Image 1 (cartoon, protein in one colour):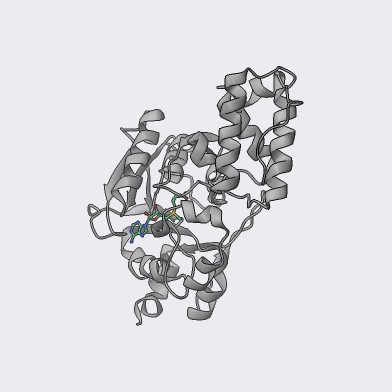
Image 2 (cartoon, rainbow, N blue to C red):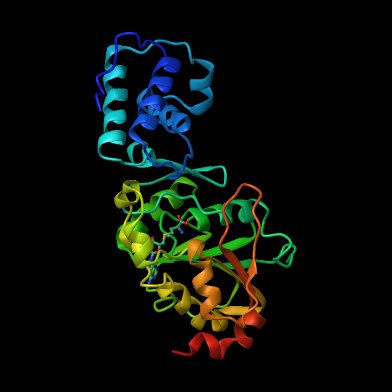
Length: 307
Ligand SMILES: C[S@@+](CC[C@H](N)C(=O)[O-])C[C@H]1O[C@@H](n2cnc3c(N)ncnc32)[C@H](O)[C@@H]1O
């Protein structure tokens, strides 16, 4: 595709429109932080101009300088030719209304769990009033879930873990950005293996859950994300099944577990047909997130630990 820009492009509006048209023409995949060509082009143009979203919208008819045009064109070219999701070019992704630093060592945050966090997990979490809420975010990646929980639930203390040291470096950048060192602890751990002995009111996780078959058919954009954050064996349940087997002993009585399994939902139900997974609904779309109580995890323990 010819990505030399025509001379008739002057304003922010012109560049966003032209970029969006090229993105559609190239058949790009959207879904890593934005879900259409216009949002993606807007994010790249505004990043090139060092403008915040609201500022950009207020100055849509402002003209770009030559240097700015070159920068925009460079970003558009990377987006189209290398299929790099815009968030990895701008190093910014939004989750639960908060901005997070991202690079290619972490997945671009997009879990529907954001909606539950904004609603403070109501009505599922018992209101402890002023009491402390203990939360564990397994497979934290950029730290988006852990940090958003600490932000929306001021009485929460959150432990967050990931097996990838480079992902944890990103989580630390984000934790520092929100000055949450006192309430969010980060651990390098293979799921529960290296965690300090604790009991939690809430265990939340968006673990890897893509099956090998699905992995092979993902759009090129996913190739920029760490495979460790996506791939989970032939049925996509390699990590989730371990979380289910070990989860009960990490929850306090009355606690809950909330886990995203996406498209692997069907495989999960097939593997544990007796377990009454509660599949949560989301107003902003997305799904494949189940909730189980501490009692249920205990009750079905044998099924989860069966080989
Ligand atoms: C789907 S990403 C989710 C990241 C983040 N929670 C989010 O919602 O954007 C899954 C994360 O799990 C981590 N991971 C994979 N296997 C793991 C394991 N056995 N123990 C802990 N973390 C693991 C990956 O490094 C990756 O950061």
